[in-house]
Amino acid sequence: MEINEWKTILPPVFNTLCHEVRIQDAVIEWVDIIFEQIGTASKCPPHAHTWFEFNYVLAGQMETRFSGDSITVQEGEFFLIPPGMVHSHVYTRGNPHEGMCFRWRLACAELEDEKAEDSLYARLHRLHNWRPGSYRDEDGFGRLLIQFLEEATVSRSELGLQLLLVRLLDQLSLLQQDMEGDAKSTRITQDPIVRKVEIYLEDFQGSHLNVTELAASLHMSYGHLSRQYKKLSDNTIVERMNQIRLEKARDLLLLPGSLISEVAEQAGFADLSYFSRAFKKHYGQGPQSYRREYDGKE
Image 1 (cartoon, one colour):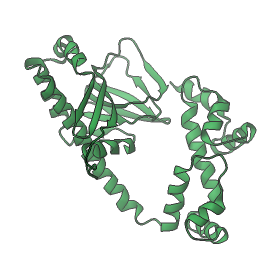
Image 2 (cartoon, rainbow, N blue to C red):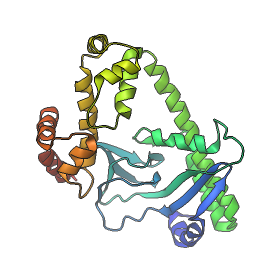
Image 3 (cartoon, one colour):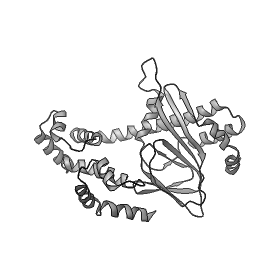
Image 4 (cartoon, rainbow, N blue to C red):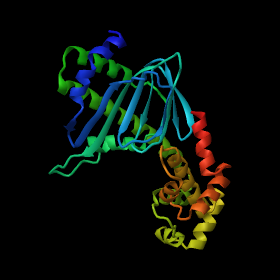
């Protein structure tokens, strides 16, 4: 069956699947199951959302951007967007793509028994750590999609269709696990002190970094920790903290309607003028100028 035929007859079937389903200890709420409908749009501006989004290109190509990095997604490739990740899309004029899009939310069901470490919820929750990019389908996701479309056409079995979708998500989680294994094998060569400081800084949510408290958490004096970190990373701890905050601010700036003052506060900068100076020093232009230039590239 051709894609256009599926696009005609299957949307009502997809609508019946858009509700919560519980499988083992995972509660999955399907927000959308759709064929991409581009119409006359040439782009989708930078935004983020509270759900996961999986996109698979069945034909043609599209351009997706994560934090300003442009990626071309071609036929037989896919990408996954976890909640909160800023992204945008640009569609090729004269070469519209055909694709499928799944959006879902994930919650953990309450169980009487203690949850297993490798439960379905735990596996699917790993997808929060998905690395942005376009991935060539080498794991049979396209075959699963075609099976899903064919069964939706002939059987209309809601349970069977739901299980196929969950199987696709679980297969994504296994791919994520493999990628995390590769990342861990790379990170293991990093000095333990640098790795521990990086973890602390990435998780830190406050506006004032207490480096003495950080050193104490590693059972070291602040002087010794700062000297070791500088020697191993070529950055001071405060410099690295500012880098992480500025990277976060850069992503927040691309959200439609965000105010510069709000971006500064959410990124951990208490002083707006200091934030503007630091941003300009790091990126070569002020926050407002950076935003205008990015919008001009859309």
